[in-house]
Image (tube, rainbow, N blue to C red):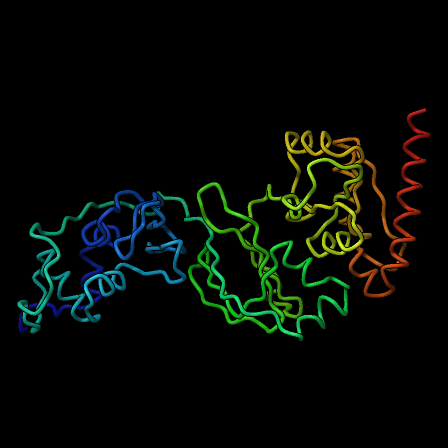
Length: 345
């Protein structure tokens, strides 16, 4: 209309914030990063948040892969297109922008006009990282990687909650993305975080750029849930792949989320009460030896390392076989026990 600024996303964003829009159109939302129940399904256990990812607020339902900014949320909730959503906002917040769309054809949202709260959203911390996956069925080609290279069986993969995937959705500090994966792409399910999010570690062995993606808490121990309650020997190694190789040989093994992640004193106390002997077997390289020495010194544990030329047990199996690895491990563990015995005397 002549003499008035036309309705547009730019004009609306100059007058109304995303926070204001979510407060008006999303029932249940009151505070950034605080859970509430979905309007789109039966959600007796609140699983939605509106949080900061990147520099914007988004609506996220932990049960769905998609995320919505304020405009997309309005479009979904009221079944309107983008221009209709803009006209609804113009009407509900009484912005007075020019529009030729007939108001009678727009759905009503509330009898009360929209409120602007003048909230500075930069005061809120970034929302937690969320990963969602699209699983696929195991195929014979997967065996070329896991079974032929490392001797890891399908039963062992399933025991340790390894799932082949075709894509994953990421919500984090860098915003949102949907990622198509390589064929050889796998998700390790690592349980649930304290705030109820699914915890995943994405592994693409042949993708140098995006080999790893994770929202796993640093305190998580890979393989821990699969351990017997009590036993003799426990090996602390550096990756789930190594845990599974050792499991194939009937060794109890766990691995921190990474060699740089510490194991808490409380958890180590529990581990040592359940296993009579705890041995560290990290990578046979500079970072691995440094991390092993630090952990060993903190808790008075043994360290063993594979012979030069192989970095870890999965590399060793790939280069040799399980029979040779069993001989090497048996010798290393025996030498380690003798060394500890002589030190005690």
